[in-house]
Each structure stands twice: as C-alpha cells, then as structure tokens.
Image (tube, rainbow, N blue to C red; front, side, top):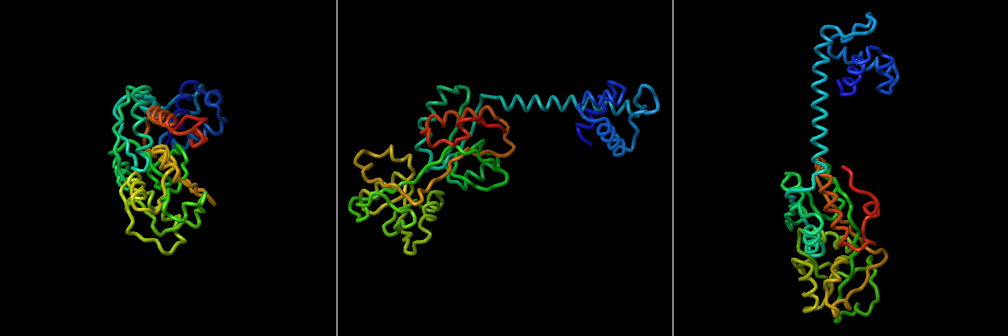
Length: 308
C-alpha cells in the first residue's frame, strides 16, 4: 500500500463520489478506482460500499479510514520535521578536509563563518581521504572537502571548484629554462612528492604513469615541505594552483604551467546521501565560494543553491 492510495481513499470518503474524488486528486476516475481496488485486494477487505448512493465506507472501511487519517497526519509531521532540519542554520558541524586543501580554505573559512554564519559552529579535522571516507560512513563527520570523484554509493559529491596543478622547479635544474612543462612528458627523476596516503600523490603518479624511472625515495608530508625540499636540494614537484599565492615572490619565479593537457583536480563537498541539513550545507558552500577565485568555482554552484 502507498500514501497515494491512502489519499485517494480519504478523497472518496470526503466526497462520497468517485468522479468528484478523482477531480480533486487530479487523476482519472479509472486510475483512482483501480488504486483503491488494489489496496482493498492487498488488505483483503472491502473499504467502500459501491452499491450505496452516495458511496459510503463499510464498517471495516470506517476503521481503516480512521487509521489512514492518523498515518497521513504522522506523515505530514515527519515532513515538517524534515523540512525543519533542512532549514536549520545553527549548531555544531563536523567537517573533514584533506591536507592538500586545508591551507587554502580553512584559515579564511573560520573568519567568514564567524562573520556570515555565527550560529553554525564548525569543527574541522584535517585527515587523509581514506580516514575521512570511513568517518563519513560511520556518521562521525557531517561533511567533508575532498578531491573527487570518489565513486562511493553511500556518498553524495557536490563539486565546489576545479584546480589546476603547476610545476615547481629549482633554478638548478635544466628544465628550469622551459616556459611550460608538457604534462605527458613530466620528468620523474628528482621528483619530490607527498608520502603514501595522500590523494595528491596518486594524482601526480597518474601524470607520471608513462615514465618508467620514477624514484619513490623522494617523499614528503606536506606541500609546504615539498617546496622547501626543492629549494634546499634541487629537483621539482607538482603543487596545486592555490598554493602559489602562499609562496614568496622569489619562489613564485619557480612556477611553470603544466600543459597538453593542463591537469585539473575536482574539489567537492561530500556528505552521506541521508544528510538532510540543506541550509547548513548551503551556508558552508557559500562561505567557501568567497575564498576561491570565481573562475575556478563550479558553474552550477555559481547559479544554483544545493538541493538535497
């Protein structure tokens, strides 16, 4: 049985006429009659005496209709609770963020949240992707900011922005004289990269997949460390576009664009598919949008609010 069938039954009880009830429900009389008949068959009980004029419920039908009214009332209450939850814009919110995104968003994010959304209290946890996914599944986190796609059935991904990778190279390297670096010919010798467990490491390895001499001993724990290692030891690394603004002016001279193609990563807000606090989700996204350069923001997020 369905809520729709129950609504049809209440309409017939109200109008005591199948045609008038079908007009009220905006369906054909045959559709309404068929749906009610199916429910009677499912319950093995006749709900309406069709021989009486006007139509009236049977004795069993009266009891069924009384229960239907309670069910539909409770259903409406449930919808109101859900609507209230969706529109809620206060309370604590636990957010996971990967280390290769946190430095560019979180400092200003706290400032904007206090200014624009003072009733929402974010608690941010910097974790690796695998840890965040596990905590989302266990509902230990409300949402996360991750590189996507993840392709996980239980999770909903809402793209926020798209970020290019750039090449950071020591002036001591011969490749320093190149104005741009072909991403399909990314050199792997002297390539410093994040230690295992970081999603950015995997993305860089994907760029290097055609290169056979990648040397895995060159690893570091953060992008800032990678840059400092290159400055002190030579070599090169791949860093996200947003990290460039955190570099000193003399370091920014070491940046080279990656081309053919320009590699890009998608950064998304990720929630469980049963997450309902739509207003809070939009507040979080709105504040992040103020941090990210407009040209990087997902085109849909520029035009529309997030609907769950």
